[in-house]
Length: 323
Image 1 (cartoon, helix red, strand yellow):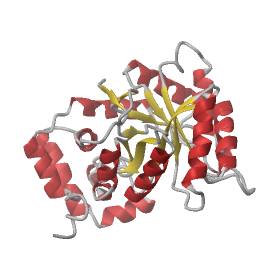
Image 2 (cartoon, helix red, strand yellow):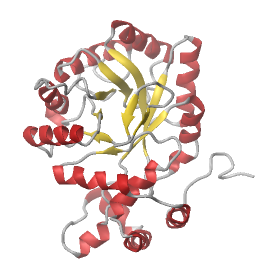
Image 3 (spheres, one colour):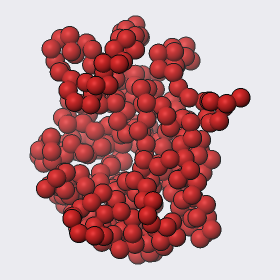
């Protein structure tokens, strides 16, 4: 496993981040524990979760599964760079969502209880809160850092100008501010190249791409469909219909290179300049082992150029759409 610094910090994390969103809804507690044990054995030290994972009536369940795993001891917590998130509604009452100082204070304490730990390494804002001033957000985060409850702050699903707002306000307070941004980024969806990635690079933020296979569409979906292995439904089915020709060209190119499409999609993200660690969110141990194959895939410039032909990207704004 390769390791890199998270943005401009001294914190070193694995080039893959273990996503845990499936733990609870789709993966049993025992299987989740086995996946996390294997992740450590393979050198993955960066785990990502969120207070809302588990969903519906089971919100918080995923954090509880991580907490029970940490409680098993054996250095599990000490070897893990733990990231979780705050923003989504955890109840129906006012102040049980968003980024008010009150909700941040309550949410972090609730996450710490579920995770059975005394601190969170990376506390991420799951979404921008347009109703709460940055001065309030940063004051709340500063208190948590001073209390030792969190070490670093990250964002998720922010626009480029949100990153600028956050960082300039933090700078005025002599606070470190954000160290990472978690964004939707993959070969099919490259919008963040316009402004989010340039902003992240300017401010020294590590980018953590989520949905690197875009719901499985970059994982050889057409071949699996033909073989009867997978039937695409829901939003993935809608997205697939307009991209069959593009995805067929991609799967043909993957076959030409002698690699699985999923491996190429992950390996491509590892070549992006500001990407720290794509999130791999396995439902099974087999899927985790599959993701790790991407570490052995080397893409030369010719292959990268061909991928750009199949999935055109963006230049930074405004050059992408202006002279």
